[in-house]
Image 1: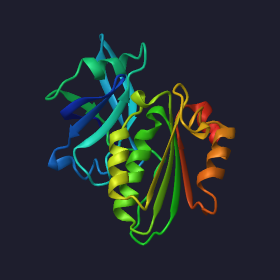
Image 2: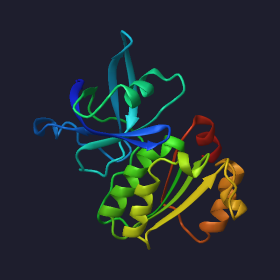
Image 3: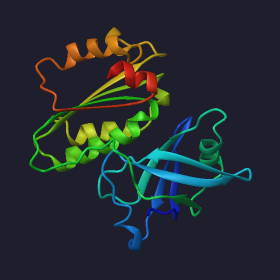
Length: 226
């Protein structure tokens, strides 16, 4: 049976004005227990204001990479996310259960696939892990990402994505969509709903035979895009 273990925070850094990135050290004796499949999450628990709270946050690290990194969007009134952003610092511990979850991709060096990801807001976190892992492991595969946010300043992991684009310019396509920021081209404005996804796919995926597609974001967005 899986149990919670205290993991030491190596770094906690602001990711955007309303989100943080937390790096968690995993002791050598627990490494096998905390190995994960890209897309999986970590269940956490903490005592906040005298109450035990539990939340799950997706891993954004590449497969096999340590420390484990997560991204947390601070929700207004969200006790756990506010605690993580303002009540923790490097050297503190955070209780985490080993990885779980069926939203995942299993990279295989023999694959030569076309992947498409649709992410909105903090939904980028597990998909970032998938993108990193696929591009590192599957030399014959490509990944197309459509990523929706209110504006560029609230876009989590944007620098990570641009760094991956520089590493894999021929195998990674990035398409950002902003709902509260005017864009040069109308296709890049709006929300990732059913109509927008059809428009984006028509513009950027003509002739692509998609092998696997992944969608992560608010429930209404997932339903529309799916």
